[in-house]
Length: 318
Length: 195
Image 1: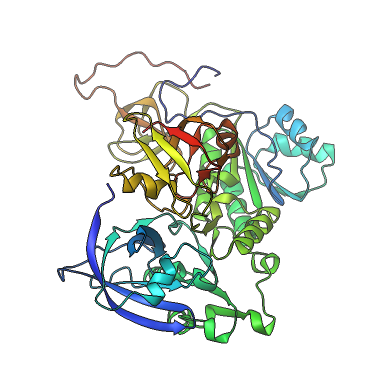
Image 2: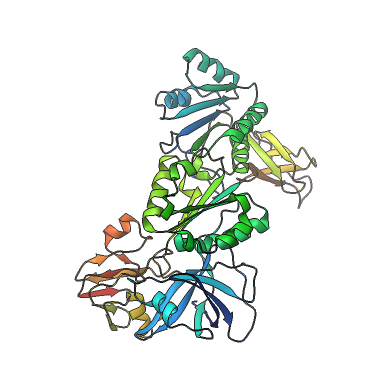
């Protein structure tokens, strides 16, 4: 569980203002495992305040055993991982990286695939497009970005999708109209979206209104754990009490105490790190995309990768 | 009928109703079951409705009822499956498919829909009419249709097959295996169990 590879940043490419591409190679020069389109890896970033683990989609060729590629947008308002990758990371930097996991796989039985990217959400679409092109499947790509210079990797997408790549440049007033994009699609069409929250919500709402079943409407969004008031987490089985700092996630705090709970996406999407709540003297702040409303209402479950409590002490069955 | 199946793979059918999340609806009827039809048509869902009717008696009844829907009437299940396929070729996302009839017909229709990329979330099945089983020979892989008895001669290899409850959704058939493979000639009496 949670096996990590010793890797190093072998190349850093400035793609656009605030967007960098990183190549990751194995420290020992060995071959990397292949992965499926839509996979991500978790990087352990050595920040001054401690290790921060962030998920990034792999954007390269899934069959490339020499390097993995990721692209990172600098998020000023976040917890520092992306800022570190932009300001401090140098070529040659050693990093621990998880094995690839895929929470955003292609539907193999689909007859046509519509890939939709908003901004840096283009990264998983590149590995999808590459795999679909290799399989000879029918697909198209719709890529919305802020301004012409932010259309990073569009050239690479064009070599895969040709005339079936459609770009929408916000600064020119171009936006994706989902009610047009999803209209009159043949049976067996699957849609995939990675982008900002508002875009993901509009996409799901409109697809549902147009009668698309959830089985054909895919999306991926990783959340960063929002900071909040400090609190204490108590592990029932060992009695250990751990302080969770303002900018730390509950999962990171538990890990820093030497306990290693299972995890996969670290972005509130996969459900792997779910913990049972035995007691809580404040309120649960659910930030994940995984738990159902019924689970939330029960007050018995929490996803410690992105969720926290308003203060005081929470006891989990760990 | 209401007893839980002895084996997990055997389908359980619940009373069929319209899926309100669809924007187009296609009802495939391969049995004469006026009660189910009347109930469904009395409460039509919003959006377009197409009927593919593979049972002559059902067609007559529908004609009398003056149902206002796009209607395709076929004389048998085979031609109805072809009609279904040409409709699915033209169909778009948002369609829901309802398959009503004997298991042989509705699972063949489900296989056509699966070929067109539909998922189980878009298809509802309801068994009505004959309980006769399509049987897949695990020895020669031939299909024997319309089996009403516990034992049946395989249409491919001629072996006497015992008809199991083990059902394959992909093949739309129950598994049949040679009843007297271990002691040749030793066979239980033949009984009609799937009327």
